[in-house]
Length: 216
Image (cartoon, rainbow, N blue to C red):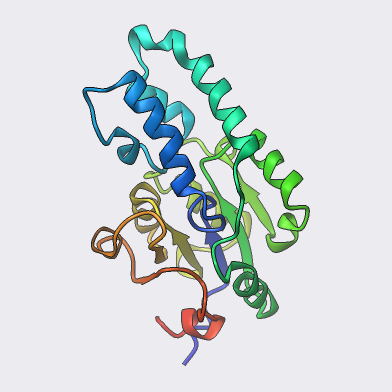
């Protein structure tokens, strides 16, 4: 039986809507090896963090003078990125909306990044009732603040929402918000994703409104 209490689907962006995480892993891998050769794997630890959080984690003290250089490289990188939808996403989100569910993007990316998204995908905004970026919440993932604010935007509670996430910080954020969580396997292995999600999916192929609403 379908769970009629589900009223909103909240999506992270990278690794959830767009299959971009491998590209970001390349970029941040290069930056982390450049500035922190003593800390292999740092690029995996910062997944799901805002740029400000990343700088707090790895670019403090003497490295603060490098912030603008990193930002410039990141901006140039993002303008060249491939923004391919995760397989099956467009059909899936369209079906959710056809069943009357509200949809939102809840991302740690900033508005400047989103302008690049809109340029490359003019149809993007038509898939969502709200788009929340890093400027819209006080605390970033793994704090639940971003997802709670998204629910409030629709006048809904945690029990009304299902979250689609891929990063560990994002999954923890959704769990802390006490929402139902679908873990995408685009970034992390199922062993890690399973700990922080109710169900796990490789992509949206074969995933429908009935499948998601019937899980709970």
